[in-house]
Length: 636
Image (cartoon, rainbow, N blue to C red; front, side, top):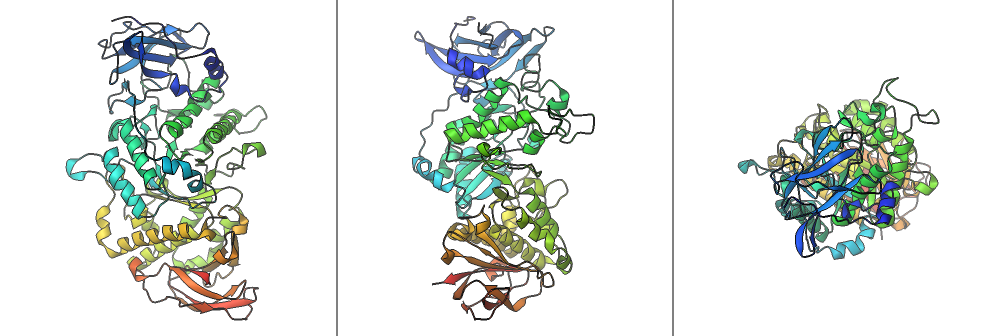
């Protein structure tokens, strides 16, 4: 049995594409593939290890003995080792034992292209195929409409390990269980998309999945690869899109991972100034190496192709773009033009986005990018990076800072909220209140709100109401939708018991209705990335801490008039200038009793009067509840 039969899945064209960094479906070639040759069943293995003098497959089919199954190196200097091993099959556990030309160093590595991995702390790869009959054809045909930039995009960010645990059994929920419970919950809450924190295999739970070792394998913590497909399928069958967190920015140094793979800096940049991340104690990909680019872009395509993902949220883009990111003087080297931009990473991101959108024009890539780097979400032909959207970190920071202030001081900080509108349309912005905002002593979102209990919840409802009517798309992290009291803890379940209390249940009802409002009102999504979709009525009323504005769709009949009162003092008969005459109906009020509001400041149908105000010819008088927001729409 200790023989390896010469066999290859690579054509000369594949090799040329791989070497030039243009092969975007390497997962069809590399890794382990169950194959039958001349009537003999077995597994074809292929791995890239150009600095190796010997590569053998060790596994449970050869008692993990080195040298029993030596792979053959290709003659074309591609650095690819390959071969067919009879007798291996689905479920076989294996690793690559690599002897390097570099001082005969030996490494023992998991397969970078493995489709399944052992459950941590075990680290072997598992030969697998995941036959699955998809039932989401209806969604796939129409998802271009659901994922379009002019469509409602309200995202529920989920950490699968802590969303809801089987506490009594002391275990995670499985993909299959989440295909029932998570899908039903997200549908009930009216979110349009789910974003999953990394599901690619990772060894260390406290990394939350951001230290990936198995780029092509859904984590075994929650079940089999085909069971993860079931979760995606069920989301799609319920008209819910799925965004996957994707981490091309760095990878861990674990012995079985990509680091020092063949006894050399293969996937990582050899210069520690470009190849080592001090903050995360991890390695940085070598974006200038063609084969590494092919690996990463193939991985992006893989999740869209094989798992029907509707988009990728690309983590830590800022750390990729800047050579001096989190580095002191002398710890980084300028680029060829003397600047701090990482030109190779910029080129990689452009190529990745071009590859994704050319193959899947009906998905979105979303950049988590925290700096003022220009044109992140502009097309590459304009000189942009080519992302579909970018997280609006400035909005998040300024808004949370404003809402943390006691209302009596907010009149002096009106600019904290109005400032976002000076740059809101420079990118296609997504407004995030993500997991990063509820850890490491930052408190929960509710925990940042000032005042007594009633005021804290009113502030929280007002924050969310303002967020959902601000231009851009939205993202809320799990637990925020019902006012989780404590910080997020990845080791425990969310505090679902809080929903027995009216204030928390009220916040949950508010989010349901805000999602419904967002999805049903074209003015909130048709022009969400365009200055044509927003108009201030008045941003200068700092004395009252009131903000009033108009959201616009393609048709003026869809216009929404919005008023926010950032103080606990109700504003009765507040005069509002309007662009045209007509009757206005209140379509949303964050102070309703079902939200744990006062319920005392509802507006009946209002008719404009021909009295100029706010530099407009018409006006009305409205009641704005304490720490509340009201939304009006012209009635037919």
